[in-house]
Length: 114
Length: 110
Image (cartoon, rainbow over all chains, first blue to last red; front, side, top):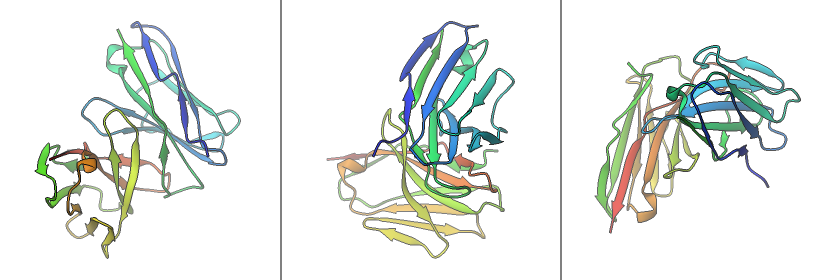
């Protein structure tokens, strides 16, 4: 079956611009996660959704970052007033149920802020 | 101090070698532990879960020492295809949030 998909695969933007990154999880997966991975580092947790609600947004670095999942499936990560330090690969993952279970990652969106 | 610490390497080993990676975690309340594999410019994929009793999957053996807050991965008879970054991962709490180490890079050479 289809895995987690993310669009766009690459996004280049200018400092100060607004960007939206989309994640389409595996069908039937109720849990959805966003992570950010900088070069040479492991993924860093940003936010976790269970259904439509953000169950844990403790990893969002500041109020420029916001994510939604209005119908409990597709999620959008939104970044306002982008900064060069936001450049990274943004990974989305999904899993069945809650708590501990294998998380399936999408291929990521590589964001470059010039 | 990072919650999950790994030696980034790289570990350069010949085919057929045995190689071991170690990882330490700081949160004693951590509940579940994993090794993920990440190929260059690809997404992480679950390699195996780690249990206190130890678990083995073919050439791969993972071990957890809760008292020392230490996790290990042993790869026997290394193959060229084992070349990748191995991420030590810890799950804490009840939200599914995973904490990743920096990753250890393995390069298996012919």
